[in-house]
Length: 493
Ligand SMILES: Cc1cc2nc3c(=O)[nH]c(=O)nc-3n(C[C@H](O)[C@H](O)[C@H](O)COP(=O)(O)OP(=O)(O)OC[C@H]3O[C@@H](n4cnc5c(N)ncnc54)[C@H](O)[C@@H]3O)c2cc1C
Ligand SMILES: *[C@@H]1O[C@H](CO)[C@@H](O)[C@H](O)[C@H]1NC(C)=O
Ligand SMILES: *[C@@H]1O[C@H](CO)[C@@H](O)[C@H](O)[C@H]1NC(C)=O
Ligand SMILES: *[C@@H]1O[C@H](CO)[C@@H](O)[C@H](O)[C@H]1NC(C)=O
Ligand SMILES: *[C@@H]1O[C@H](CO)[C@@H](O)[C@H](O)[C@H]1NC(C)=O
Ligand SMILES: *[C@@H]1O[C@H](CO)[C@@H](O)[C@H](O)[C@H]1NC(C)=O
Ligand SMILES: *[C@@H]1O[C@H](CO)[C@@H](O)[C@H](O)[C@H]1NC(C)=O
Ligand SMILES: *[C@@H]1O[C@H](CO)[C@@H](O)[C@H](O)[C@H]1NC(C)=O
Figure 1: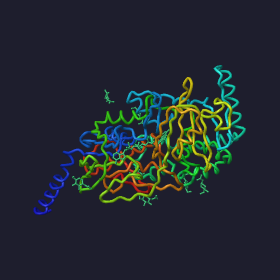
Figure 2: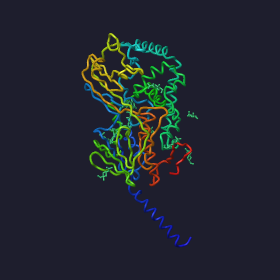
Figure 3: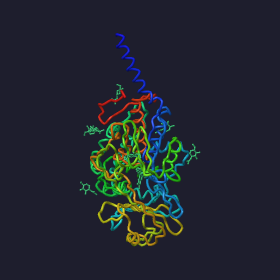
Figure 4: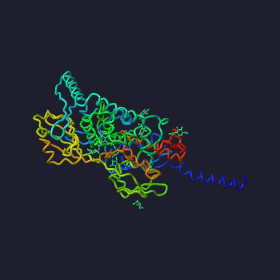
């Protein structure tokens, strides 16, 4: 090698080092739009999986005055209840870990035990109704519970019920792969890749109804019990994808729990412990890529620059201006109207004589003229009760006056609750612009729950760190990536 050549080579090396230097000196700043479980979890895992040399300031923007998003409580008659995301599964390991880490208490949701009486209402009559035991004697309660099991087995068939629970168990076990250690669990660049790796992708290609017919469930079980569950959990029929359906059915089993005092405290606690600058009452209106940073403009007339931007809210009903523009598949959100009533149901509305004849949980089947999805008792007071009603449309006061004989207090919440599911399902990309603009809620088309949000957020945090490690000296555990095409291998990153 001649001298001239050597000088050029060392010059090039010097310039490369100079170019790289700022990344060594200045840690990356991250802006997260949304303070729900997703945004809070991304911040948490970014801190847990990196050091301050890699990730510097993290800002979270929240347009509301409180954190938690779709995890929120409502206070009626002086008592607090979950208004949005309410139940957690015993195998929701991130949520369990958060609860422990944040010194929160896990509690069983009120009245979610097996003794809850259930009725399936078709708009005219109860097509199915469990016996309700008001007895304080455990032996009577056990006999009633046994009788209820027999009634259920007779109506829906023992094999059908068994096949339903094994369908759910198989899906849950596949989902558990997302808790595997880094060494065996790649970083995913797309929702498709993430689902394929766990063996869950096929479940998003067909509807729950189709899947359940194939595993051999009786039509009656699908039309009634399964339908009331998908309607309660996702406000939709058995035409949702098999995966959203399996998640929904898993949320109707035993051992369900919630965070005492409100699930939103998981988001609050994670944000508090992740060294985050939290901007409440600040809505992001635009995200512009300026070459090496994203400029986020807010309704407060302020601008923030960050090297990494994470959208942690569904984009479907927002008009955040992206510059340059982004393109994601169209998606409709299912609105669920949650109406809380302190008062008393009118037994006559259900063709019954006594209020005690009305089941504690009234579910409904698919029928065009049914004005509500479910009504359940949250709390029995001395003389009246607190109820929660879900419906696809707002509950008009005149309708409420038909259903209730007494109404002391009413609170109505309109949630842009979860995606309207389809099969086959389509997905937005996790990486919106091929650079450092991430879309965490792309995973919601698989299923929308607090835990799936945490699982998706954990992957997004790893994906961010993996992709930043192309620029910085990043010495965290060996990360490897997994795109939707399993043949692709990005471990060179
Ligand atoms: C009625 C209902 C019942 C449910 N039941 C359950 C259940 O029993 N179990 C379960 O696990 N899940 C349940 N879910 C689903 C669960 O609540 C959600 O999947 C989860 O909370 C979503 O979290 P997230 O962080 O993705 O989004 P979100 O919680 O929606 O957070 C997004 C945040 O971004 C904010 N935001 C939006 N745009 C902007 C902007 N431009 N600038 C700044 N901030 C912005 C929003 O205000 C919001 O706080 C339920 C949901 C609903 C609505
Ligand atoms: C939960 O926390 C324990 C202890 O910190 C950890 O070993 C485990 O991996 C965590 N689980 C998940 C799902 O993060
Ligand atoms: C998914 O479906 C494809 C095509 O029908 C099949 O080849 C594959 O084995 C299925 N995967 C799983 C995990 O069931
Ligand atoms: C479910 O899908 C089938 C086939 O597309 C359709 O006929 C039916 O009306 C749908 N049911 C509901 C409740 O949307
Ligand atoms: C934040 O966390 C600290 C412990 O790290 C705790 O003392 C404090 O009360 C928390 N603040 C809030 C608002 O939760
Ligand atoms: C964001 O704000 C900056 C500073 O006020 C301004 O120069 C820029 O044009 C704004 N961007 C958009 C997209 O409005
Ligand atoms: C993989 O993702 C890309 C873009 O995200 C998409 O165009 C392609 O069709 C996907 N491939 C498969 C096999 O899903
Ligand atoms: C990616 O490549 C590495 C190293 O060659 C290999 O160990 C790993 O199994 C590959 N991963 C996938 C998903 O193919």
